[in-house]
Length: 226
Image (cartoon, rainbow, N blue to C red; front, side, top):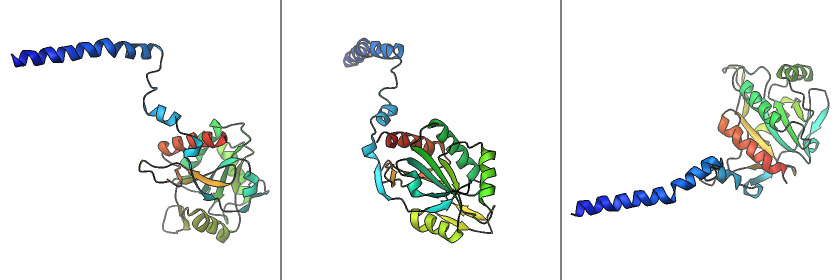
């Protein structure tokens, strides 16, 4: 008897679910709103104020591929991404720059967005070499500068200024090693980032993995709205 009552109770719950919930699901599918309650909705509620302000980005003054002096003030009033790379890198740099090209394409034509790519092999990456490198990559944006200068100065900017690791190492493929991270700087010249799942600032964005690039592009959009 008790068993029969249990079956009746379960049947009633299933029937009630069908009456109340299924029509709503069908309606959402028809209206293409099925994703509104998934994680994309959480991202849509994410605002610029949720981005952590780490502090002012280090000042710099370097020479670009057109032999023009570029400083952090060149990017004043712009949201920009900064990376450390070298043109002959046989490992992560091609992937990083390919990802940055995708980011650039998303914001193509926006005057208040830019990219700074600083070489960690300035002795090899002269302005002439960097000019050819931009041509090989198909870079046409006037706000994407490939920068070179004094080696010690650049390493100081990387390791002590941004705390983004860069070093010479004859034992590794290419002769140099560095992290594959991107720094995001807002229009006021502050380093910005989101928090991880534990509420800690990520500091910098993964320049190689798709998840890092997705997060980066989302946060660029937020900062451009300032």
